[in-house]
Length: 461
Image (cartoon, rainbow, N blue to C red):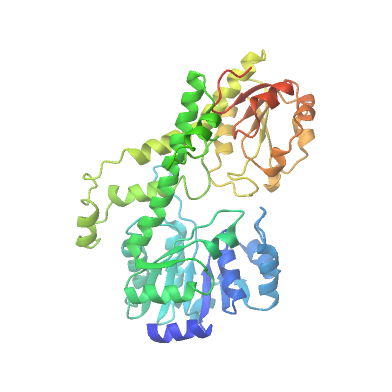
């Protein structure tokens, strides 16, 4: 099949689609293409997820407006079905890959899920199929990892036996469908003709700009935009730490800074989590620290030497260090507040409010709360956790709070914004409250009779 033939099938919605990985990105993408009338097959390795999806039940527990009803609609119509067997992909014209791409403890991407998907896809890849990686990957990955693996596992050559590109997603849990519809996308093809074919495909579901480019540019844009956000959050967090030390209030400082033209100071907080921001800056850095020798010389010349020595990385690692330190700052605030209340941290019972990384979500990937809990346990504290969206922590808040020595707010869930501060205080053995998200003012906490600490605020008694 040629690209011209594939484009005609896409225009008629006759192209048969597949989505590998039915998680936070793959599932809504599959549903949206199915809603437009495409025949969509989803591949998912978790059997319980396959069962739920085929029953029209979303496996995503967090608040996702419209997703559950859309899933029920497209599965009942027969436009979307989930399977676990890659053999079912043998008749697919377009395959989207939406698998996790984490980094290890040394901040190196292993691409285990991506490599497995490519190895399993290759033997059943139909001649002339278009493969699109939507997962976020380090610059150079399409050329150095995806292309050779697909060529090797399929026995076909790029642009002869199959076509290849990447179109990084731009979504946030809680806004998956609206983000996919309204956020612009960078569409990277291994050839301009492939990129234009991808634009034709995504135009069925995306109402915003679709910018065709090459695969390396698409990889760079996605990793750079999340690194930018990480650096901006790190600046806000460092200002918060300075405010704590010198007698300031970061929330007032931020408000006044942002009155100045062209300033937009981000929100400080108890840490940065999720699958993207803690990881994507390292993917961007990886591209020059570990530049493969087989990358085209033009790309090496345009970026850095193969050993990365021409790009001394200072800002990205520093921002990561600041943001990773914020849960430890919360532990220090807690220790200080308990001391003011006549208690030491060891042998206390601490209630942690929120375990997801994002408000009103069940996504716990790289959760700052996990880092806090680990630190508190090392400091000999007993920890109990409440989160209204994470299944294992959906206990009764009142029961968990009873006889705790402190409450630490880590996530700005809607439920916590409505906390009865007086009622909660009366349940605790020691009235200590740590606000890691700035949800409450000092006046509110003082009026309720708490010994409190608010991130980025000093003189708190």
